Image (cartoon, rainbow, N blue to C red; front, side, top):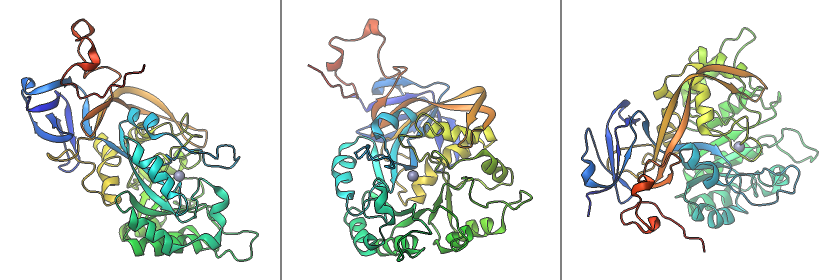
Length: 413
Ligand SMILES: [Zn+2]
């Protein structure tokens, strides 16, 4: 019996809790971080992965994505979501936070068929719309907005529901009874009743429900996602940050990227960035219609901030520790000894790279993050460079029965 299942050797360990980034080996046992230190003994582990020259980070947390890949795909307006295992591990993401794809009427199905059945850790904001944004007619159905039931569902599955989402609720509607604050106020009420945070995606912006009005409605810790979408008046006509942005941040409102198909414009993000207004969390809003661009994955979105000039540690913090704290899950986004061994091994490629936004524009900058390996609860779940495997000349046969491997192989017959 080896002391450890696996050692990541020779990497640069990013510790967001300590705020450090330094050479340090990492040992894993029974799915948990077992030891850290310089020059851990390779003989103590069943498997050693050489990660020299690479960054060893806590597994990334995508604070806003959509991972309920269930029909109705045939509906023209349906939000087409993605399969978390297919798209998250390859980007170093070990925790996917679904942002309101389902509501109180269909959350149970999401829980049973996706959350409980997926190796990616899936957490969720429950939507105020009864069937969530997966089913657009539900989003305007005022009679189905029910804070009490939503809070009850959030309390029932409090281990996976981290907040309440309000999204896509029109300010104007053909129905006479369509109070403009029904969705946001309902979400705040449900969140207050269940001790959760609120995430708001509120478009379009209209005079009766202005952007400052929306922010003022939020409580400290609540989140505005899609902050760099073109429609939000973040800066005045001279390009200076609006004072209310700074005041709301000071009050504790969180600003999340939620890149999406249309919600990230360099014309907004760079202007804010250059004035020191950086997002609290970086997320993709990944779904079927943006996974081949312009969002692609969390590392691609994070790399845009590298390219804008954000230091590497600040970028990584916003996809690890910052989202963990924002959703009140401090046990995530850490590599402390005893923590769950959710790990991303990353390479920061040097050179100039171009990045696209949602406005059909390019920004060119330095650096590009790519995923070399992903571990979920100590298991190697993505390893395209085969760093956890022996050279083929030395591979035991049959390889999939080799003792001591931390990999779970499936034999197809
Ligand atoms: Zn979304």
